[in-house]
Image (tube, rainbow over all chains, first blue to last red; front, top):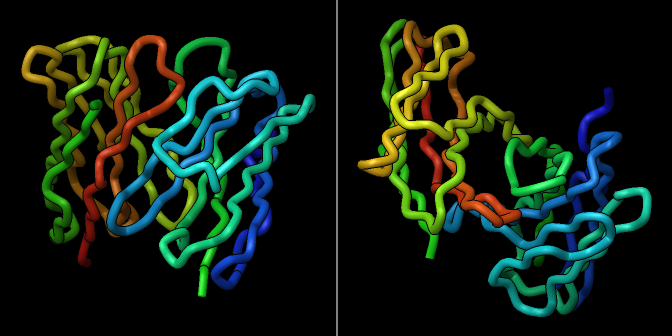
Length: 114
Length: 111
């Protein structure tokens, strides 16, 4: 079965712009999580959605937001981009009925902010 | 605050060597510890450990958890160049919907 699909794979933006990233989970998975990966900070949790509801949010500013649709697809948005937002954004899905467990990751969206 | 520390951060060995990667953690209401391998982009799942002292094994890879001392190790025997990757350790607590990751160990296997 198809894995987690993220689009776009690569994008370049300038400071002050906004960006929207998309994630399609594995069929049947209802939980979608987003993580930011940078060389300095490693993988950091952004937020998690289950059945269109945000269940948990990491320590990121309000410029980072997300949502989940009824088909479990998810989007995250970053507004007023800063240089420090350059990172690999990873989406992960799981069945999600309970606590976080084995997550299946997508290939990521590599964002470069100039 | 939940925390995961991995060591070493970087390791270079020759093909055929055996390596041990370390992961120590602090987490509220520990539920599971997970190991992932990240080669290019997507981390891929290796093991999930919940019980102390029970070794999980998959081919040349094995892992064990010590809940009393709050650490886990990942062993790779007879390493191959294809084992070169970043190995990530993560923990999750009961009632949490997020994994807390360590910085990762970058393993390089030279032929």
